[in-house]
Length: 223
Image 1 (cartoon, helix red, strand yellow):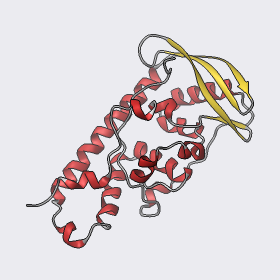
Image 2 (cartoon, helix red, strand yellow; image 1 turned 90 degrees about the vertical axis):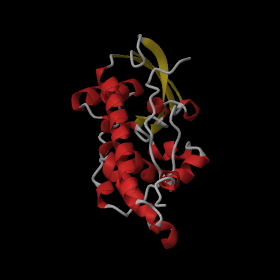
Image 3 (cartoon, helix red, strand yellow; image 1 turned 60 degrees about the vertical axis):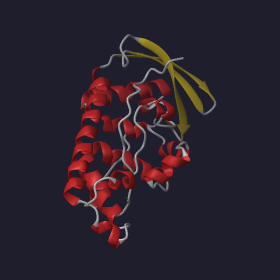
């Protein structure tokens, strides 16, 4: 069965460095209501998405500890994540401040490079590369946001099986109206998405793979 949510993947570049920058630690209080049914939770998410026109509200409906555990080992290494909170901050800052996020990551990574190697890096070219990647990332985020906000949704009833629920959703995210089931899992009194696949699609279907900061810095060197 085809997914009902968008299979657009934005290129996220690696090396989350918790504690190196204050901007990653702004308040992020999940406002999802306790006690909502799985289908009402999705209705709540859709309403808040359309009202705010911001992708950030959708991140409040993710179980980040479960999402973290579902990450492939190679992505964990690339993104340098330790837990679900790191993962949440990583995704949040990429959406909220892509340019500042990449600049901080580049700066942090440079500190790990031996001094002799660091001197061979062309800083001007590196800055241009980071700026272009940040601009591309912002365009991708804007496209995803526009698609999600402008889409039509019909939320059906949920089928609950223990701590898992399957919600029938009809949307036109990928063009024609399509119906499918969205998986949600219980966390205390809330129903949350257990991974980011509902937004990004399965890892193997993403058209842009993860790229490490080391790969990013490999080309821009002085001769």
